[in-house]
Image 1 (cartoon, rainbow, N blue to C red):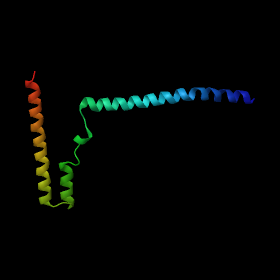
Image 2: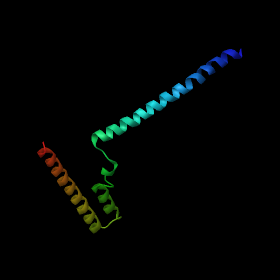
Image 3: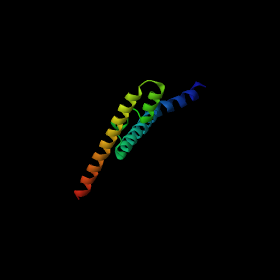
Image 4: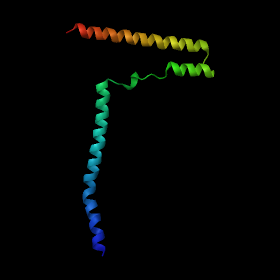
Length: 99
């Protein structure tokens, strides 16, 4: 009676490498799709802000930073956004005129 129990196990042993390879292919495909999606959208990890104006307000309201520190940080953030927007418009304008 031990022969029938050994048979299903032998089938699994034969299929295990194939199943493992399929799992690896699926994982590699998912990673590739994620990277392609990021590349397509032009996302980069460096583009994400460290914190937002809402975070600054919360820090100010909780007393972690003073009102003067909040105003300085807010002005720096606004300046960076304006500079980035201006440079993005300039690059977009240059791309449009080179055709």
